[in-house]
Image (cartoon, rainbow, N blue to C red; front, side):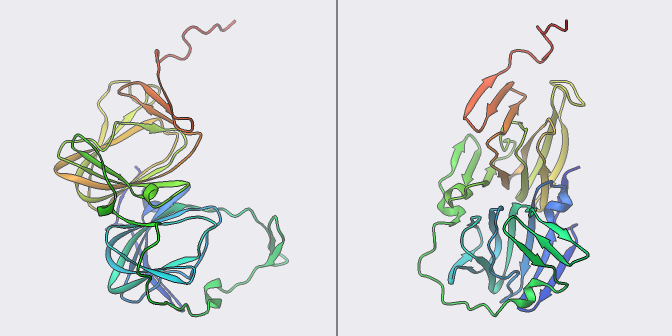
Length: 313
C-alpha cells in the first residue's frame, strides 16, 4: 500500500552504553525501497547514536518537538521544534542529545550498502582499500565518553528553521525548501502547507526519484492516478486514501502511478523528502508534460501510443 501511521509502527528501545533512544522505523513500515525515515524519541539527556560520519548517505533531521543540542566536530549548537538539520556525507561527525524537555526528531536518509565481501570461515571481510576482522561485539561498546561543550552563540548554516525560510506561495499553497536552504547536496526536504481543498502539487510520477511524505498537521486525501499504460485508463478517477497527522507515505520510483495530496477542511501541513536523481524523468498526466530533471527541460507528448508511426517490417 505504501502508507503507515507512526502510532501503529512498533517502537524499539535501544540502550547501549551512553546511547539511549526509542526508535520507530517509519520508512520500513511504509514500504520504502532504498531510503528511509526513522523517528527518534529521547528523554532529557539521551543521545541516540555515537558521533558518526556517513560515506554515501546524506542525512536530514527534522525536529518535531522538544529541544536539545547537535554535536558537530567538537562544537555544539542548539536545536528546537521546526528545525531542519542537514548532515552532509563525508562531512562533519555528528550526533544529537535531548534537552530538559526531551527531543522528538525525524531522521531521513538513504540506506547505505557498503561494497564489502565477507569470509565467514576466517572471520574477516575486505573492501577496496584493505580488510578487517569481524567481531561479535557491538562497535558502540568501544565509544569513549563524548564531551558536550557549551553551545556556540551562532548556529551553522546547515541548521535552518521553518520560520526563517521564505515560502514559495502559489495560490493556497506555501512551500519551503528547507534542505536546500541548509545546503543539502543529494537529497531534499520541503515543508508544504495547503489551504482547504488545495493540492500539494500537480499529480506526478518519478522514474528514478524516491519520495517519502510525513503529515505534520491536518488531514488530506492521497490521490493516486495510474499512467495510461497502468491498471486504469487515462482520465479515470484516482484511487484515494485518507491521511492525517502521523501518516507516512512512501512513493518508490518507476511505479507509473502519479501522486498528490488534497488538503482537507482544516488544511494540511506535511514534509516531502526525496532523492535528487540527475537521471530522473517526471511525468505529469493532467498536462501530459515530461520533465527531464537533470537538464531542466520540460516537454509535452503528442500521443499516448508509442507504436504509432513505427514500422514492424
